Length: 190
Image 1 (cartoon, rainbow, N blue to C red):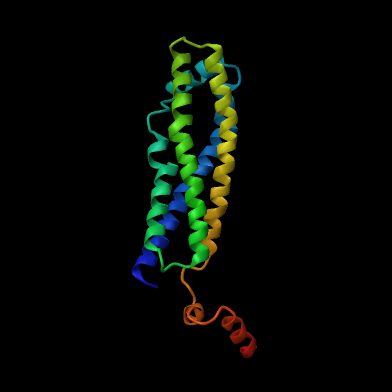
Image 2 (image 1 turned 90 degrees about the vertical axis):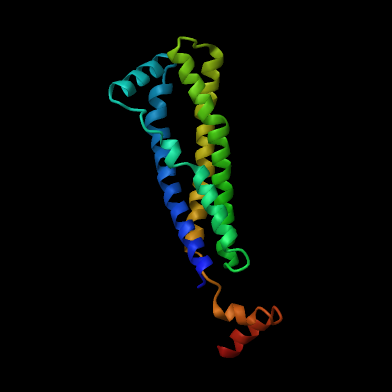
């Protein structure tokens, strides 16, 4: 296996690890955290923010380290490195994984994070309105749709990791032959 394919494989593994941590955190967030602050707006959000401040939460930004944006960039680099040399099945699953991560990154960074931030800020500043409630309730529903996309991405990651990392020698030798030649060669050997 050449050096480029090794590096592409390492990038795929790192991307899958970061995405797994991200996805696990987001599932926990959807099941355990979001219901707490969204149960009875605005009171539940005020109580949640108060508890968060009391126990020192919110100091580290989870989005900086574990973000689907970094996963997307790692996967694009892996795809570029394995271009024309990597096995097609692994590249296809890596591309699908990258697409899911990119959609997630765009949704999170482009709409979800700003929307929830503005909604929480409006509540803290005492500017709660039906529009804020509608935006936050839409956010809660959209969060589940995003998790569906991320589940697809996690499944694509598993398929990419399970695909062969290199093209087999027999495939390389038969690549110049007619499409049916490889099947005929297998039939003769059997």
